[in-house]
Length: 193
Image (tube, rainbow, N blue to C red; front, side):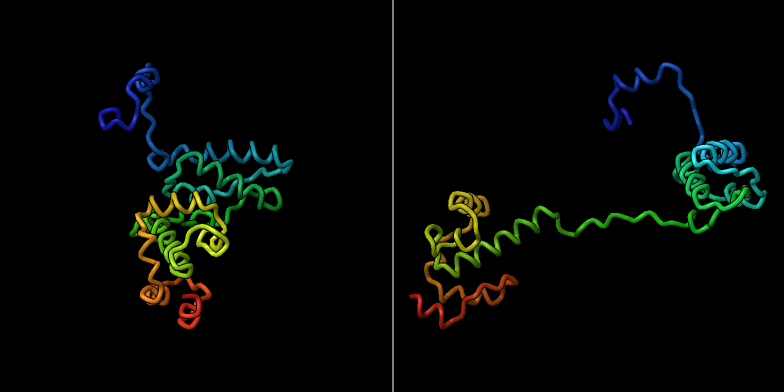
């Protein structure tokens, strides 16, 4: 990790005074019963419950599980089971172990790109509706509810040519193709020009 620059070398050497190799819990199935007993005792005291018996079947289920989250996952599973446990016998609902971790779905297009595209679409639609006028009570800034300076900055950042919207009828096709639906019609465009 240090060679891949994923971990700071100075911190690595500070922590690496005495290296301890600890295999994952799935490779130490023999440790699971004593860890379960410890966690059951801990959570039965915390929850003020009297859980005294842990069946071998429950320990067998826990020993066969893969434990991708290691001891923290075991601790959380035991805590959850202790909360749900009724009586003095520890039991576990196996569905707790079968929870799937939701996978992040990475969008095909970066989010920044889609936001910029949506902003461009909305600004161009407002400019088309206002005939390219940015400022004033009938300008695109007023329609969008943003200060003129903000809209001018967005127009510059998105490389929008506001002058091309002076010829409104030509861009009515753009509005119809857009998912942004301003209140403009072909008749309204002719009436305003």
